[in-house]
View 1 (cartoon, rainbow, N blue to C red):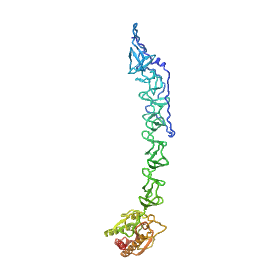
View 2: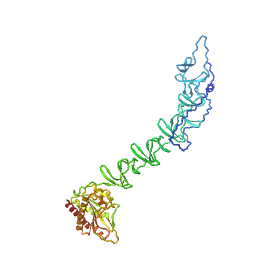
View 3: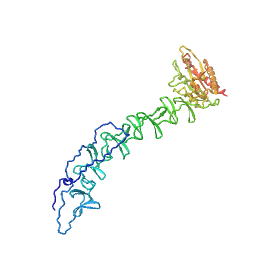
Length: 555
């Protein structure tokens, strides 16, 4: 058999091919709501290599046959030669050698090379096993872009496709799968290849597969765990939307709305709770926003109590979120609030005066940060506590129940808190224990004074509006004062400075019968006497006797 000489790479075949350089379809990802960025970088993907589009190689496919013509056989007269050549059947194209199809090889036919696969069929619209791209007719494609079988390829000179790497074509980066198919609307590591195949660079892209926006920074990598204008890119590059984000860099929580931009300078209703956001987007928490209060989690307080340490008091936020003022009923109980919303106290319930239970409320005046009067090395709060402890011990020994505003050295607000505490109990009456001082240098005073409530238009009641001047309360307070004062003077021998009227807070705001005792002067010679334990016992004996007489004379 005579063999033909080897052809230098497809010289004859490729000369017949029509030039068919095709640019990949360009798809522009656009949005009118997403911001632009001024960030600049020239970083390229680490796997990318600068290449030009001009291919000059004339290397022949390594698997192409060595002969350029089929073997020649001379047949005898009348003999039907076995068929060798192109055969078209069943819509496919085959190549037969002596009536037998060839497989997995290149063949020269009709003045060009064709590849026949394992099944004997001519490969069309795709890639041969050795990496050559052929068109619908099975012919090698021209160098450049080629669209075959619904996929884009890039053919080098010689017909082989570029595959498995990055390639810069006409100044644009593209990526190709191992089978030569161009990446399209998909990720290659941290880089996004758009519908056109071009690598996204310094732009927003929407990935239909993940149903999310991504921001691609200059250089091609996606942004993550960072802001781009009003938008936040989470771990993995996803744009946050309809969710809270905590940014550790700013130590603040933000809410990204449905369009991805952060909420700012507004209230938002999120999952049935109201939240407020500052001008720069930070979520407010643990603070007042006008008449409204936002809690630790940022949600607005509503129908609940809030303690504000900066104001040192309680507030009640009604339905709708605003704080209540003046008189307001909560869970069936009336409460008094200042005009700025600060809670004053619960309004005392009506008292059935005269129906006594041998329950006594004792109030040692001052305490904690409030020392009261301080003279001659004495602090009033200490003297008050000494009398209270002696008095409590004796009353409990006699079978009385004793309640108190403080049992140790602690501060208790005298304006309303002490009265409020008493009003919530079933105590029969209220006794506030104090010592006096003239406050005038060179003035020497002594003796016991007993006070009951006397209304003063300049000092209106805050929580005891209904009972402060109740006739029965007033008369029972006077009767208690008379019994106590007389007995104290008798037992102690102290100077009688009389029963007096005043609008002291504990007398004004206590709904029970109430008395305030001034048991001696600290800024005179009497200071030695009142600090003496034996004399204190006499004062206590007088108070106890006065209490017993009060109960005995009750109607």
